[in-house]
Length: 307
Image (cartoon, rainbow, N blue to C red; front, side, top):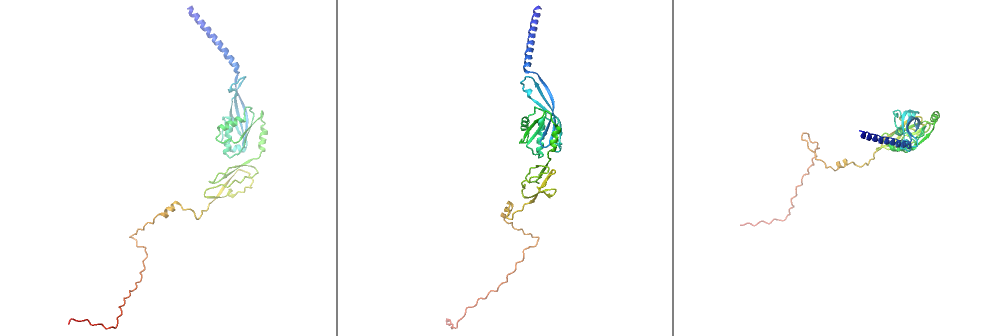
């Protein structure tokens, strides 16, 4: 019994040493790694394309002390609230729901919907109080996830404290823009135009349509003058006239076949009287009687007899 007790005491001592040693190395590793703490912050962002949208989002990240862990450099953004600021935004984004969206995906959705509504822009202006938002990160996400070609720039303006009143005042002072669209009625497509209030639309090249000639653009049934100042969204409609065909048009294949066919013999219908007109009889001329040969006065010699 005493021998077993000794063995148990020795094993317990070895186990205790292992636990103490392991705890020491784990503590040292934690000191080297630093303390990783999960943090969340609420931030605001204004996204200006042509419409202006306000996004409120939650930023989640890990705060690490003296750490080189990659996870400490990662930030996660989720939209918690959004607001459509101007009239353009209320018109084209009225059916969107951006709540709980990934922040970068929400920005991409705003751009794609603007493009689908013929809103032309060269740059996205973003104003935010989050220092971690980088324009290069947003642009990289868009290029990887958008179905449209990204041919615009992203500019992020960081402001520790956003002066919302000033931002909205600057937006309201900017001139309104109106959308001029073209309905070519089956002809070639014409791009829409964003026209500033008080300015005129640019007359596009005439559309084309097979078998028709373009006449003019009309608004509400009347010919449109491109010197007209734009004060609202409008849609211009194309008017066409049928193209005139040439007299010496080439024969169709069907017509060629019909010309090459042999005429079919007509079948006489016995039940109906013949429609052939009567043939007029040619009058007969009486034949002349041949004249007898003329006789001479010379005497005829008598024939000898047998006497």
